[in-house]
Image 1 (cartoon, rainbow, N blue to C red):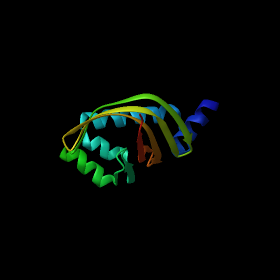
Image 2 (cartoon, helix red, strand yellow; image 1 turned 120 degrees about the horizontal axis):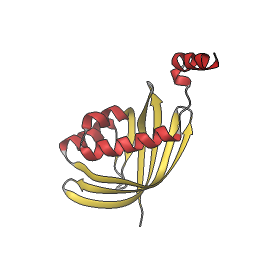
Image 3 (cartoon, one colour; image 1 turned 90 degrees about the horizontal axis):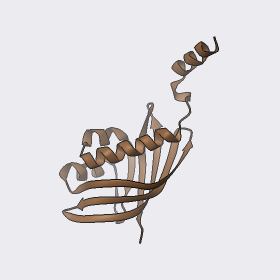
Length: 139
């Protein structure tokens, strides 16, 4: 009987299911896979409409600007390797922070950056969406 009540509560209150670090870890992996594969439709679905995307170069873009650079090929990621990450969940928001190696090309110029990356994920419509991205180059 207890299990039936718990199942009913989980079905009726999906927004109340606690988020886990594993969900954010999976969202990070999915983001990296979609970006490096050039799956722009998947990236679009993962990004919050009010995205703030701050590059290590100092450039800041909104969602349409960032997607436009990906679609045009101005920004191309060959690899995104999460080297060490820490995840913190705060209700319907979560932070992913750590060291990441990113390789690819910006406007045809290759880059191979070791960065400190901070991602803010928010749960919207039952899905985790990337709301903010900030990287800082490491020496």
